[in-house]
Image 1 (cartoon, helix red, strand yellow):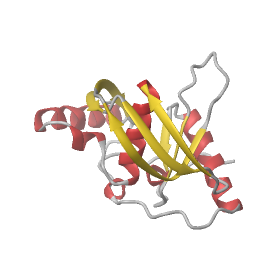
Image 2 (tube, helix red, strand yellow):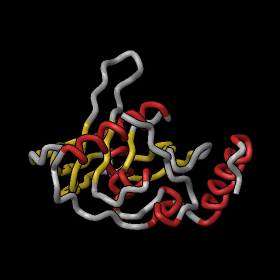
Image 3 (cartoon, rainbow, N blue to C red):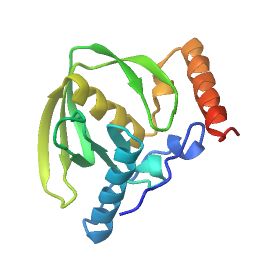
Length: 172
């Protein structure tokens, strides 16, 4: 397993829509393992393949608390088929270090996807898992959390990311 570099905003590759996964092989398994190691090390609760520079419709999520066993979920070629209700959740993103903002999303989602072996499944989720699914699904469609807020909040998020990059010595 290997840690992968996470693309940071405003990297233009984050805005590129991902392509369907067509090969379910050892290379895909390794990508999932590397993404999981990267996500846990960050630390985060979700990571989309295009956040690590791989333009595939794949994301992973694990919302288990630190005192709970891991519950890694792998979504390949996901399709959100139903959205109900609304909720507002304070979201962060590994591609937006140091930034967080309240984002309005559906309270409940139904998603169809495949696992890393190609087996189809359907999942109904609410709460944090619903938020994470929508957030990561946006990523593979080239939509970022900054696209979900008004211009004033966009400037605030950009400033937060820039300040975090300066603190980390990564400022552009």
